[in-house]
Image (tube, rainbow over all chains, first blue to last red):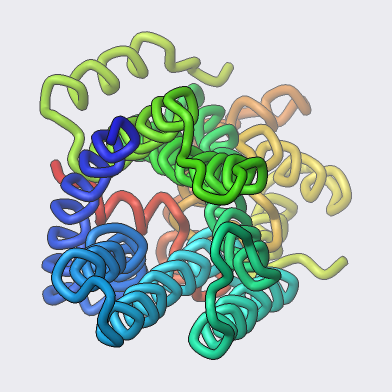
Length: 246
Length: 102
């Protein structure tokens, strides 16, 4: 129950941000807005809602399994959209980044097929559950790494007066958000590995998971919907620190 | 390594406008790009414009080029008039700048 609090906050903010990004895409028709909007919607609210609808509305019926597979499919689409976003925004000309996106996409498709075909075994993780966790964690961790790497460079440009300080901090916020998501997925995977059949996640794990959700939500909010006072503070602080080249 | 069209244009213009030889001009431009963490192969026209206006004058002044400010002002005008484009990709700054609520 504790873990749900942070995840619910993440879903609420994710829904808000994704709707806004998809609204922007309706006007701009630019790929990054569409990819980020679909990524957030698929990974967060949409995918989980379909899975949870199956559990709560159709528990114990064949429809529950159908909802689970559909929800996982939507989540997989969200992860693929996020990976393509990372590639197109931070490494647009890179062949290895394109190969990594292809690997994540094929991997998630295979795990989805395996989930649909191989029946679950009570109290144990199967090989495709591990693959699913690894691909999802890798997708988010890569996005976090690229965004934080770019933030480091952009911070240097802000100091020289060559970059917008608010845009620069949005790379930090987006990287933090994706990093928290990656940590959350890795945490659940590690915790599930250590569970005995019938055991539930411990309070410590649930709290950590909740913290990851809240951090991811906060990062998302500050990356795309920065409050006016925060934006003013960032801009003022940057202008104090700007170095004039001599 | 082949220079991008943007880098090549700036180096050529600098060689024409100053007493610097090509290797020195190229090193100066690459040095200011590195200082601002821009990659010479993928720097966009907008980014190069900023570098010419804000960082290049100080750099070529250090190389004993007289009237560095005036030369860079002229170079910035010439560069803008060329309408050069980079590798065709938007920079992350342009993308995120569009996606942030202001």
